Image (cartoon, rainbow, N blue to C red; front, side, top):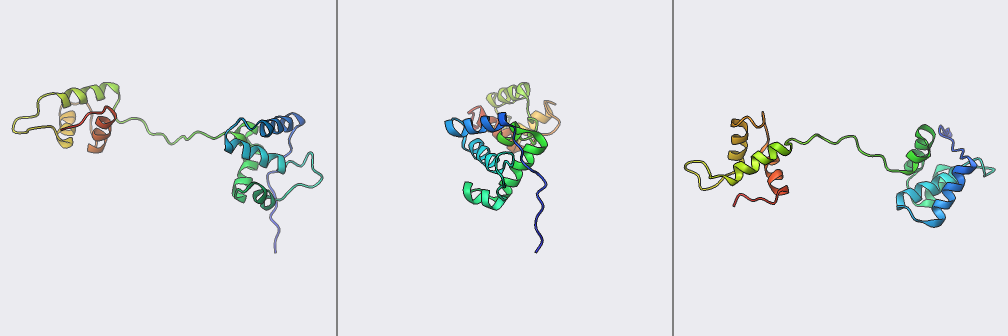
Length: 155
């Protein structure tokens, strides 16, 4: 049986250790941050004569061993704040319709329906936006979500 080598060793400075102890004692942070602070305190080798293994820490803190190893990695690679705080997602997509385009959609929606129609449909609104060259292309679902956001209905 091979032993897993630890790549990320936690060595906290006295200031970092005091900060984490103060954080866990007051309990005035979100649960994730407090959990990560406790994990780092347990994984620290600067104070303890022998460090705890990831499995032991995960049992004590009721988290997965993957969480423990990920917190270690964030501390070593990115620093204390990155290990404690939630990383913001970079996968946000740009809006399909900007404010001006949304205003034009609402103006179309509030206008009289086309000849032969009693009311606007999502497909008709989409086609009208494209015809008026407000947008190059847009999905019916985008039109629906925009109208829902504005509390408008086609009824």
